[in-house]
Image (tube, rainbow, N blue to C red; front, side, top):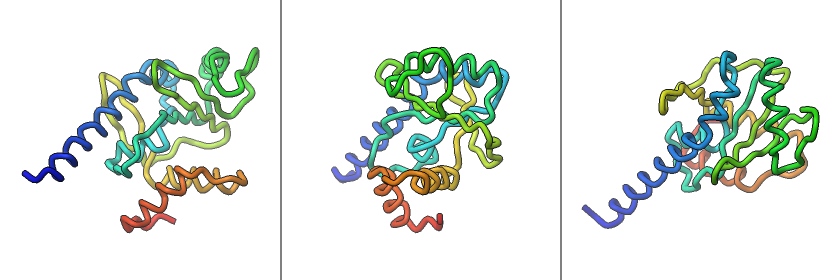
Length: 172
């Protein structure tokens, strides 16, 4: 076995261990939010990694998207938003997104009040939990919408998009 291949194997193992670590640390929040609703989806860079796209960057957070949240979910979000590291909300949940930290993992919670849950999701069973994973196409659609509604593009989104285009993905 060549040293290059061995390094690649170690890199792939580390990559998979990182995915597992992120899911393990976010599982309780996911279960609490998803309990009886089935409308919470993992998105962003982590979903690309789960789909097997190793863009040689390690996802740094877990994006949880809640589609059309229930009253119970909004109550949970009110409590969670108090712990938000980015613009904490004090008494009422009024924001579309916020970030919390669980152990060493950041969780970005994004609320889509007017969108329905997509049909083309991957189901990942991990530690007695079924995670719904956003499709590659939906991740890029979300990034495209983000760029259209914000003046600044995030460098990490630009780089990952270029890398995927280099892999000949026909995503527009």
